[in-house]
Amino acid sequence: MSICTGVIYSRFEKIGPSAVSWYPNENIDENVLRLIGLKSITLLAGEDGKVPQKLAIIPFPSLKPALTGTVKFIEIKDPEARGGARDSTLTVLFDQIYDAVIYKHMMTEFFENLINEAAKKIINLEEKKEFEAEKYSKIIKGLYETIEKSLRKLQQIEEESEFPSDEMEVTEAHEYKFKVICIGDPAVGKTTTVLRYVDRAFRKLYIPTIGVQVSTKKVYLKKIKTSVELVIWDIAGQEKFNVMRKMFYKGADGVLILYDITNEETFQSLKKWTKDYVKFYEKEEKKLPLTGIILGNKLDLENSRQVKNEEGESFAKQNGMFFYEISALTGENIDNVFQTIASEMANAYNSMKD
Image (tube, rainbow, N blue to C red):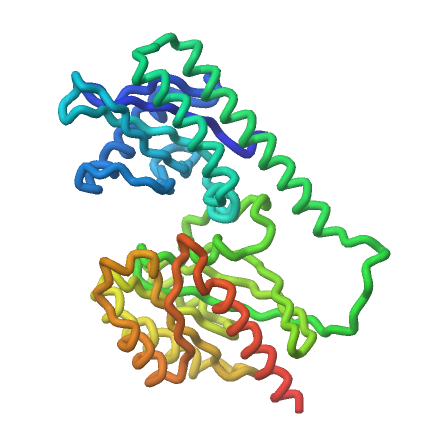
């Protein structure tokens, strides 16, 4: 089974989006081609006509199986077109079970450069009015095969790392295992934050209908020479999961509560989320004190900020929690967050033993 589902190049004509070239041909039907084009142009329209320079991640949950696309927006100079330019997109598709691959690998400079190089070749053909299908097919097929080959190599490395050599030095470090839940309003970036950090990107994700996704991450704490395995529960924020959510809280040792710094409403919801979890936690017979961190996500959108850093910090302090502002897109502060929560839970556990 391929890791990458396919690559599609779509051009936006007067009559609407049209798929120009795609590969593999047998993997992608007309419904997929149509939806990819429509959703891409809708997103582009939301950018006020400005072509995004960075790759975008677009989910296609209505497709069967559900897919996720890494999308490169392309602007083609054309004096005959309205505004002197035409828009198109280059989309790399994955089954949603491989979402971690997108967040952990596809957004890196290496893969971004691969996609950008293919985009440059397409722009060159378009601006020269060279519309032979074979030329586009060669570019699309080449991109697909290079991405698939590179991901296979990364997958092999990942699998080999799970079976350490007998010659590796064995330390006396203890290993702990803690459950961490991740909660907050819909669309604040919970899933992106978790997938940005987790281990084993190529291990197929459990994409549930019941409102939770479980991932793992091993963290080594140098100061206390301790290895900690975090079992991270990414819990859906939609109201329809309210009843099930309380079941997912059970047994948690730590909690990450997220808001979007560009959305004041999600910050106001922190009170609800904090109260919701703390109320449940107080009823549990827990061996560890609660370790919580408030996270203000989307630090990369500083110009659109609606919530001041001081406001988030103050709220966290009032509730006895740590505070970070992060960017799930760039990865800023993500490592610090998980190092902190792992360290605090390990220290709390050691204190209770003493």
